[in-house]
Amino acid sequence: MSRLEQSVHPGYHGGVKYELQTIPVWDAYEHEADCPLCYLEEKLEADYQKFFLGSAVMAPELRVEVNRIGFCSRHFCLLERGSNRLGLALMTQTHLAERRHRFEKARRSAERAAGNRKTRKIRAELDTLIEALSDEERSCMICNRLAADLANYAFTIVSLYRSNGDFADTFRSSHGFCLPHMRTTIGVAREVLRGEELAAWLSDLFSVQDAASGLLDEGLEEMVSRYDYRSTEPATDSIRAALPRAISKLVGRR
Image 1 (cartoon, rainbow, N blue to C red):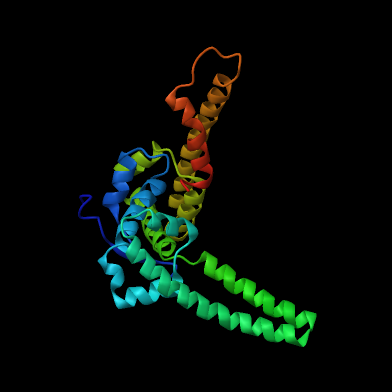
Image 2 (image 1 turned 90 degrees about the vertical axis):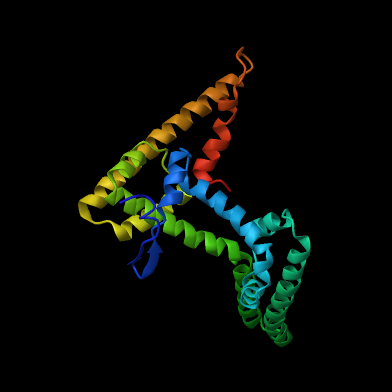
């Protein structure tokens, strides 16, 4: 079966519907990215920036969702750097009104409790208010979509490993994943693979992760030695890249 023919194939695992999307996954591995899911996430973010600043966001059903969920600080900044500040201002205006309405309801409950001057009741209402504000802070239209997309890509990686010998070889020669995306992919593999398949996949995963970590350790050690005042050799671009690559491996590209 060709890559194109495999490009979309739905399946259910653990009650979650996934779709095979092999073409972008093969593309990420052919670019030999330090983390294929970070590579795909960056491309997705650029697409979502264009989408949410385009004409589609004026569709009533999408505006209702934007008003309710909004964006996290990172993605608000990403949108602000885009080319449609007026469109973003309109979205922000209506989202702010929705947020204000929800906050006022929680605030009135806290104020009523404060009027009774009972510490336990006040603290309980403030706990509710803090939880509501925390939920607001964590909600994001783009993050939600990225999580679903990356779960599909992780499912594709695991499925291709199981069914495509060429991809399994490519996986074994890759650089593994950043730690956050390794967690995502392990979670999917736990649901999709069984027995010997799961054991073999984990063995290959840990091997490529160990190899990548070893290279990063060597790069950091070389960087530290070159920046020592006793060193007479200049640091190269690849040595300077050791630190950002190591950080990305630990926390993802964010």
